[in-house]
Length: 336
Image 1 (cartoon, rainbow, N blue to C red):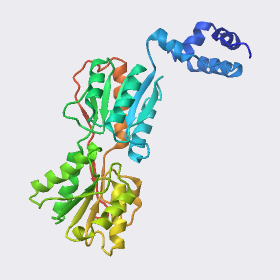
Image 2: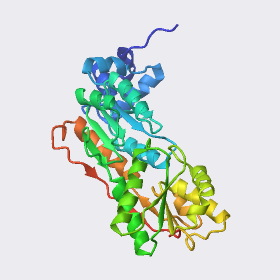
Image 3: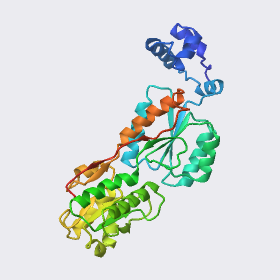
Image 4: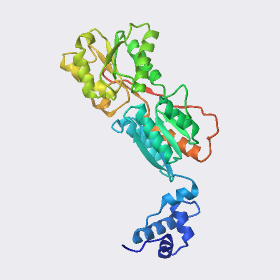
């Protein structure tokens, strides 16, 4: 075992005071970039790693932001996470990520573990949580930001949009183009509450336009995939032949459904229009391209990052918690 390298050793190697070394590692504004680089180079030569845990105890700061996402495989959630990370790049905050797999009980487990480590703030995807999660967050003095939704009873701050309202844009478009008999293809259960909101939005918008009741089709438990979309079409082909349009919960589901429809000899959009949700890359490269909703996944990450910085800095922590609303937009493709 070698001799333990200390902060004083780094200071001697860099030719600065131990206090300067300490401030450099804490990203103190009083230490310029050149000096921080000099200190880091000295630390690298000596193999020294700054003990952030000890600093946490002294400063009563954890230095991390807790984030929950339903899935990291979803390109939109990944884009939000990437944008959030970039928005916080100039801070000393580190993101600690928990994947909930669309389950509120799994979210509850992650929140309990995150709170035990005293995060600077917690970002939750969605506005539906277990009673235990809401209780824990209500009694802890940790800022909470709910994203990707506009909950009616928010816990704290909100950066999101109405999933039901976004789907009304699709129905408005379909009704305007003469499509009257609509189907909705989504998850079997309501574990994906945002998907359930989209289903509700389609039904309410159809009623507002005076259209017949929407045919509700199930593609399996959340998260539903391309393959699930294709299998659902195979299973419900007789019902689909009586529709004008199939509204899908996401672009991957729409792509799978569209491929299955074409295998069954139906022309999209001639026989049946198909729409998706999320503005995934697959919607742009599909043939035909898919009509979809752009929810601004990166914008949500950018705005959340800015809000986190303000709240932690004490700007807005006690202000009125007015939701930061992102406005989704319809992207018309060749599928409708």
